[in-house]
Image (cartoon, rainbow, N blue to C red):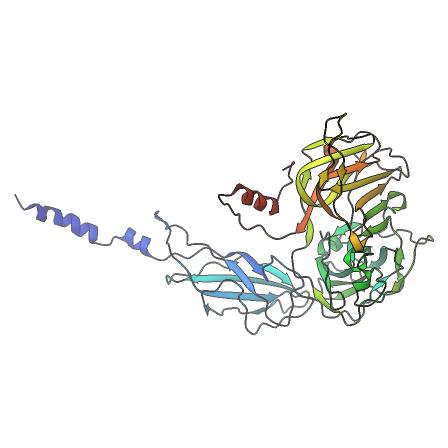
Length: 522
């Protein structure tokens, strides 16, 4: 009988010899395409500055598992990338103009990557994509799906700041598309001082709830909105459209900050500056700009008072249905030609290249009570900075005033009812409002209805904070679902969570996070 070693040696040789399957498993596989493409930390931003190459970022995906099974490769990093940026052209036969095509860059960087030699044009749409090579020497990944970004507007020369007197807050104009072909791209560049709501042919533009304050004497921020889809509706050439802008005071023209808004002026009238840039599919262009004169008209709207410190009053009797739609009759005495408005001389116009301040989540109260007649109180379980959304019942008598006050605490409960006491407001406006109490007021028109028999109202410009809300003057019973509280915050992307051994820290982190879906209570 041969020795045991000789019996095992063929098995050892077989185990140590490479097979075709083992060779296939060992061969490097191409990594997956990059994902989560960002420009200046934003997904498909508009208003990117052109004085230098923007910063591109992407996330890497590991190589897929081997075809024959087994674990995917580990400890793989980027060894090189190819980044392509293309200018989108409409009309002509030249096609898109690309930069970086076919250039392999040896680098492990995938965050804030600049593309040397990239020359950008203002008011232009660009697409970009990227692929990468792993450091295992394998094939490159597929290209990522195309991402987009738009550039800033440099030419504001044919537009002007327009408005009316201090109380006028609606502006409108109408225009006709000047081409027989379909709109390829349209962007609305707009400055609203202090705050604005824009509508194009009756449709809201963007989701900006509040414009951020600046040192207004030095810098004014403008927003960029892609309105291509609105102007493409109907597809009929030479379609008539209307552009409307509603203005609020915000920090720029609030009563408490008016002497500081321009670095010296004693009054700061609300104003807007607009450029609607349109490119048609044949390459022709059209611009609709704000200019004083009869082409733009201005009127006092239903928001009869708004202030960052004292609140907002909305008189529904003054609302004008269809004011931002084409064909609306603006010939009444309430409308007049827009006027040029003086704004800070020398202030720089800059793109607001940040996520907007918008409504993030919606809360309903965890309990309600009536401490006295004609007063409803709501407890939302946590302090929320935001704007209320109140259901106005059908048949509310014209002139009825419904007052909403946010509160941080309640008075001691009355002995006779034994329940929570009245909500009171702790915020002292001090020098800004002479010890004011911030509130929101809705004045009924008598025509509130809608398909469900109700109208839901929310202040357009005013937010306040607190855990409690008090409603006074509401006609009839008010259910818990009749009042919601929308949290307002910067719409930053939610990319992770923090969990600690301290419950209070965890709760603070949870409260501060944006929620993607509406919340019920907390």
